[in-house]
Image (cartoon, rainbow over all chains, first blue to last red; front, side, top):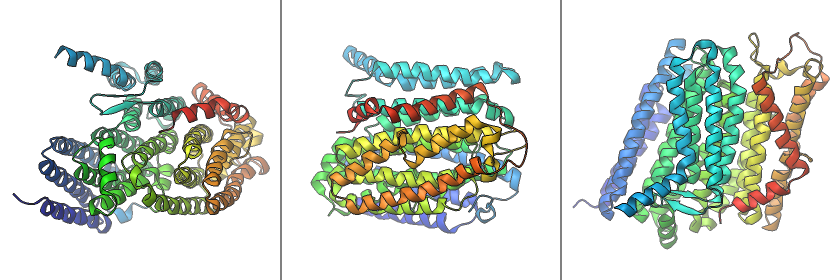
Length: 100
Length: 482
């Protein structure tokens, strides 16, 4: 059996890639993809711990997170389309009407 | 089997407030198809009825203190307190919205349905004792808020507020969920009481516990808009429709604080000595940035956004003190903050006319000569936000300061008191604009019945507990988490 910390390492790597993606990329669609990576890092954690403890609630949690991630993608793309219709851009740097 | 069914039937009674709201929200979505455009305001009335039914169901489970559905949700005075706070805020926001949506030509049933769904999410957030329930409640609330912030889909500022809220909101949820997954890994359970036991045994030396604490704290600070995770708040407040700005700044903040209190006091409770200093630093930084950045804002919604960041700092100080006075103070403060902020935003909502957005400081110029009654009401709300007696805002600050003195945090009291002076300055910029400048353009605000009702309710709730605070204090003291 693969020890749990291998999975933790994988998920930490995914989380780091996701956070870096959110912070450095300028295209909002790629930022949304990076956010999905963060949530999937959480899922790997949950399933690995679920196996370690022999407890099923981690897998239930993971399924809920997948569902929520789907809803979030739907809402996010919907808002993005509304934005794109008014502004003709999905570049985060050009969305700067609101600032002090 | 029979016993199980009986158990479930009994437990359903404890989530009846949420069920009522869900049914009414679905009802609105169906009814919306049948209504002609000029009758769309009936959706708002249906939503208010749903809130009434939900409040009745909530009233029936008051005084209980027990877990339901195998420890997924809890009904305790803390939950009841926040439940009523959410319902009050939601009702006031709906009253404010009716006319506003007319002016924006966006009177749609989905708006009211989304507001009710968000309230359901908040209630599960305040009453959840299991990480899964908490996560679903949080996301239900947050997803509805992203959509509501972008509800004026033809307005560029509204689009921009929604996308910024969404990206930062999902990011913070991801970090929080990462913390949740590690808490699950530490304990092998998603129940927060069992997590508390496991965290207490392992202590902070375990790297998993440490990372979990940092991730959960960062996620929660994002949700309540504490420094250094506050940047989303001003943008969202400025761009969102004004009633939704009020809703985000009151209800979502109260819900996030309910979650923050429950998580910090129960699963992370054993680590109190470790997070106390962290929260104190965040609180001081939050007060500093919020109050100083509010000084030179020209947009009233943005000014109130920064001031609300300042208020978050005060509320966090109550958690630093952490004794009974402090926890009572947090609840009193949240209640006071809710009514006075909703009142102030109700006045700003009233400013919206077909030719005027009404959220710039300049738009309030000379309000006293054109609309004396709303101007005086705004003065009362601003006095309350500053924390001057005899308004309800004074008692919020009073309890927080008292708890800090009781626990010997004199340095923090000095800081907190200093920022009241700063707050006085920027709130009174609005007052000076309203009372001492001449009006430039003609045109008065016309108060719709809904908005008038919202203004009167918030004014009464700002003044009456300010003059006679005992019932409110007794209620808050009864509702704190042990």
